[in-house]
Length: 214
Length: 170
Image: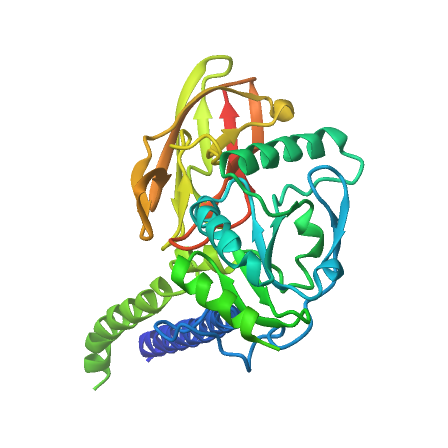
């Protein structure tokens, strides 16, 4: 009798362990699926659906809204504001010197800028080095500036490059992935966006959209 | 009847243990690659958590890391000078000196849109072979691994993770 009770007790304990393990596993998978879905949704706001070649306008927090204003220094130290580009279709390109996909798309941007500039199109490159420099870190800023200038020279970039992009990434949705680009119409409204490297054709189609939007 | 219960019990125990172990194997502890990405770290330190070495002498330790699925980090010797290399460091004040670190060769990797540019990267698991010299005693070292991760389309900001390792020097 006593032995049976012990066996029953152990069995019940193991049953409870099994049930707990099953519940814990289910709960974890549920939470992981929710997190993954949230991440996918956040990215889907900016990345066009595969093959669609366009963005889902209804879900992005920035699409069809005025682009957040900013005023950042260029490599010479001169402050440049977004507002000064009102009237031009604009591509705001967040990039970094350490970003291989950014380096690949840069020649496309240079070519497209030259091609569409006569129609009122401009590009602003915003360097987001993500090195958390303090405002008074002169040496750090000088290092960043030198790296950016070297990149600009090597890639023959002839559009404005602004520094300290990390200070404005929050209103632009975080910009954790580089490159990230926003396409603005002549009134400063975001009409398209792109996260990561796509293709020159894709970028060009969004530039045309920015130029065509009113 | 009671006797048949007794015979069945071991079978039940084995079956249920297997079930519980299977469930636990799918738990967060086992699904570490997903966990790393969700927590924002592209690379995680695997092992060893603790090593025992001879005090004052150069000792070899193999440190194992894993890059999250679908991601890569630049190797210690990237193919382009503008890329950020993966690098391990030990803090000066830890009582353990990093004498040398031997990094694995990078794997060749190309982005789909630019097959001409060959990158040197780590994916999956990689091991850094270090030689350390520790003063006598127990040292909880918080080494640092600096890396910069990307996937096939985008790159993520450079990151430094803490690599905790308990060094017992006798």
